Image (cartoon, rainbow, N blue to C red; front, side, top):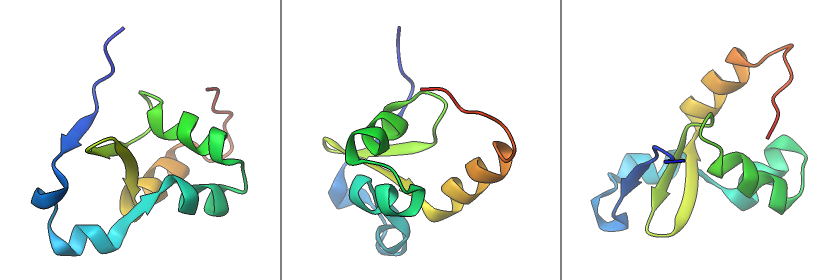
Length: 77
């Protein structure tokens, strides 16, 4: 199965995007879950993550939109 993720080189990330990026560590705090679950979520094809080098991120805007889309629904990893 091919996972379609956006891949960026860290040097190419715009400065304003760097301030908006949420790492796995920050995501676990926001979502009240463990680090492993945060990585599972970031690597899920249904989650709007961005890969920079080998690190996974999600933008605050994309996370908020994703949360609204899955509000009152169950998301299975």
